Image (cartoon, rainbow, N blue to C red; front, side):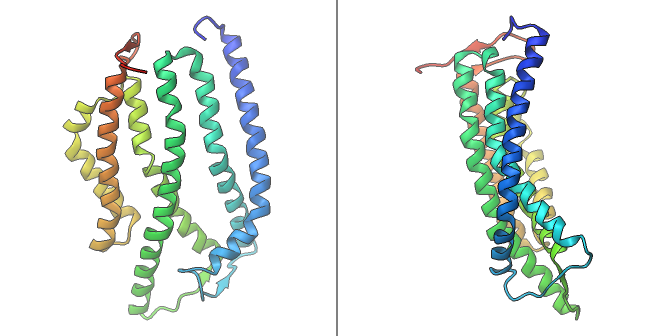
Length: 250
């Protein structure tokens, strides 16, 4: 890749973008076919079971329908996007870097699934229960609009899913020399403070819920520090510098 011209780079990039676009369109078609049964299933399981559903505007139904289709397509396409990005950058990487960065893809997918399950099965029910209890204490009669309900769910699930990508992001930044384990340890207290703030934004405003969200984030940060140390031992690339191989074994 270093010997390729700018036109060759752009041609290669266009080829990757076209492939991703085709997969995305196919995934959206699949998402459209699955949206209705998935929505019906989610309406019949806690915390949605037993609720009366309302459309507060003529557009609510189609908006929820399209939201599910698009999110399904993005979730399916994301691993393929990462693979195409790896293929595009592969010729410019050393053999060690190729092996290390390829491992980011399955790790990213696994953390994405873990974050989504954590958000939907733990944080979302806790948030719904807390807010429903608060409404009852205030004497409010709840009327659920389908768009508002699922938008509330997405606003919890999507940020949690992204937060669970922390180890992958830190490992990648370590691999290219932007982040070091020493820097992470030095800024640990500030990172902890940031995660406390994030947990209060995602979880209901009570101590137990905040701790349930905060604990996995702190564990993920410490895992990220360990992963960063492992990446640094394999190789280190200063910004703008030449890769220095320190990988032993494989």
